[in-house]
Amino acid sequence: MPYLNVVEVESGLASLATAFPATTDLIELPEPSVQGRTCHALRVGTHRLAPKDAVVLTGGVHAREWGSCEILVNLAADLLHAHAGGTGLAYGGTHFTADQVRTVVEELDVVVFPLVNPDGRRHSQTVAPGWRRNRNPAQSGGDPQAIGVDINRNFDFLFDFRTAFHPLAPVRVSDDPADPNQVYQGPEPFSEPETRNVRWLIEQFIRTRWFVDVHSYTQNMLYVWGDDDSQSDDPTRNFQNPAFDGKRGLRDDLLYAEFIPKPDADDAALLAQQFCKALKGVRGKVYTPKPAFDLYPTCGTSDDYTYARHIVGAGEERILAFTVEWGMDFHPPWPEMKNIVLDVDAGLVQFCLSTLS
Image 1 (cartoon, rainbow, N blue to C red):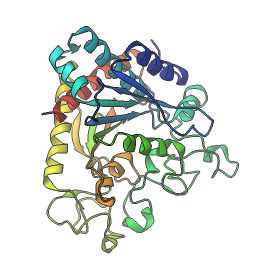
Image 2 (cartoon, rainbow, N blue to C red; image 1 turned 90 degrees about the horizontal axis):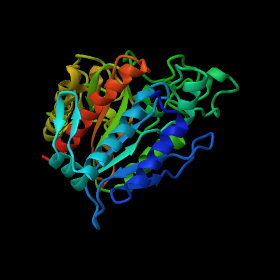
Image 3 (cartoon, rainbow, N blue to C red; image 1 turned 135 degrees about the horizontal axis):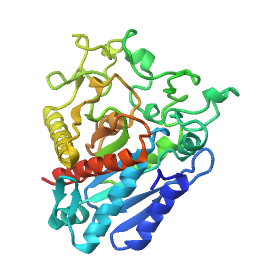
Image 4 (tube, rainbow, N blue to C red; image 1 turned 30 degrees about the vertical axis):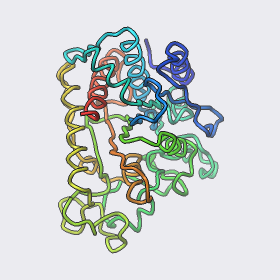
């Protein structure tokens, strides 16, 4: 089986919804892509009158990271087939019992949105394999190399990076549409329909408690924060405090570190560790659980935005947020990608189980 194209990702979700009507809902996202494509997510879980706690999983944000879609479609299929058949799941050396599968499907809503950026994926698979962004031409000025916005820099978290970060911070973002690293953030937060669809999905599931965005590569399981080192001692050092503008984003300095309550930091680290442990059991691959800043400083990312929602908005629930960085290539040969799918899906099943413990 080769990588799925855009149509096949969507038809895969629709087929699962048709085959398992008692344990799925096919969800149409409200905004079509710039090129007019309609996106869908799939809720996996038994139906109840009251909402269940939800794990929201997104993928295909960066166009060239092809395997993220396959990871999430396969995860949904595995859970649904195993639950319907009353069987467990085996991923290499990592196994889950039928009771564990039943627990995930019956106690959680697992919401998979495997293809956030369909226009970008199509362009990457048919024209330019290294394409990262969406295909919005609005800010390009007619330059084909300046088309598109990096969806994972378009969320509303420290968007004004020139004010928020130290001038020497190597923050991986740009306000130049033609930036060669393809990290153009867009003209404003949530300027893109793809980003707004992710926000809508989180808001639609009012009991979202966990969020995982699936990316490649580096073999890491990242958790907040991404803008600076994390600390749990001084709550005044936080992204809303302008007193620290111009000080964020440097490593191993005393200027700034982003506050996170210790219980949240401990919970996030434990869930990331459990993911990596289960993944390693499949075939011995070692993924590293660590704060996102340890990779490089960022802003406008889905995970920082999602966790920050409960800090910014009164009444918002806390959502622990993560980013998986699978593999060591954006589109490895398919035989290796099949193995990566097993690795990451084992980690994600364990992640879901660990949220319930």
